[in-house]
Image 1: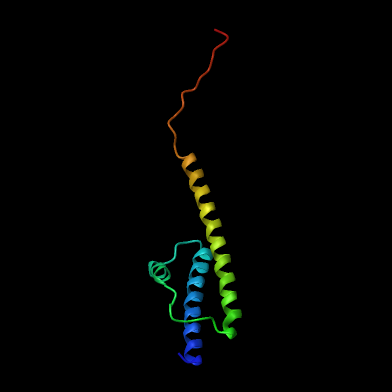
Image 2: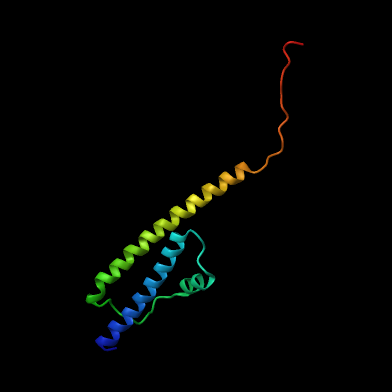
Length: 108
């Protein structure tokens, strides 16, 4: 693969990664599930095997994408934890069987 094709292949791979991160960022920002098509596309992504080493001119972009991925993964974990807590709270507030009142009449 010549240098131009090599750089173009890496650029396309980084484009795909960036789109996936943007989709997840959008879903987290909008506080709802990503569309099925987005989840399918992101989960089906596989790293290209024949790219070779990252071209030096793309290093800054690749690092920026990595930082966005890490921040997004952290935010997704925080969101899942908050959702679990909220679900636990909702479950605890569900209607419970009425407890029998217990009073002792000390005057009788």
